[in-house]
Length: 344
Image 1 (cartoon, rainbow, N blue to C red):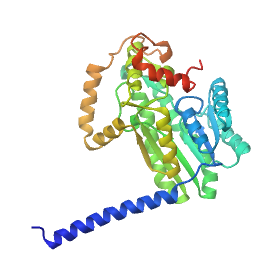
Image 2: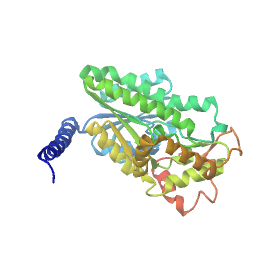
Image 3: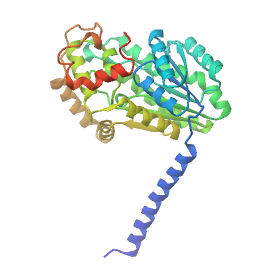
Image 4: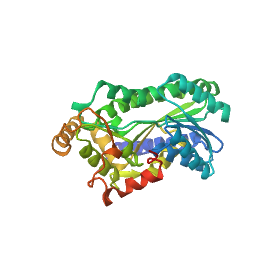
């Protein structure tokens, strides 16, 4: 038989949880913004997830500014967005160059006015066993994933602080929470971005600026063909493209982009996309030693051994084979066509 004190404890515990959930719902409603007529800057917006994010933000009525290094890809992306009715500004920019970033942000202000939302999406994918990674690979990852985001955030922060409003969304990866074999260079940059983003969230909220850290799992954007591969590049590309193509293990780019835009509007602290990524992050948080052991087994018995082209680089588009071009990868091939990944 339950004692009155135990019943009281249970009652107040349930009441406390209910109060916390109600407060969270109310807080989310108060923080939620509309993107109608807002200026949204998306880095790496010429193809892949960046382009899909631009489409989704445009559907919400936002004015879109995109940048990328490749002028041809940018031109094609701009035409794609304008054909869908978007108000879009495109600007060629190397985000690892601080001066060029400043010029880009100033050009956006001249075109549209104040910047309301910054989405740091630009990234590079490197797939290689650690034996073939060089210092330059790690430097490239840090420059693209961390320093590029640092440059854009530094450029927009003064005006956001001045008006005490703004949203910053940093697209990291589940690879920024769990170091996956053969993606070590990539993970180093994404881990840095996750730490930076989470720290900014804590310190910028007092200024009215909400920072959202996004950690997606595999997304069917069509990006494998533009990733770089080392070692046994054909085998590396095959496992990577197959993983990226399987429904359930991966998610459609449009679905992912909608979740990201919604999280930005709510001002969420974090968004982990795909069920496998959510499970992986939870298990790794509780049992990091277990995930490390499991991943070491996968590395030893499930992934290609070093060799092949060694430290030389090959694009995914240069690494196709019958094993990577079949009905199992049809969704990724279609996504590449849809999301401007075939520009070259």
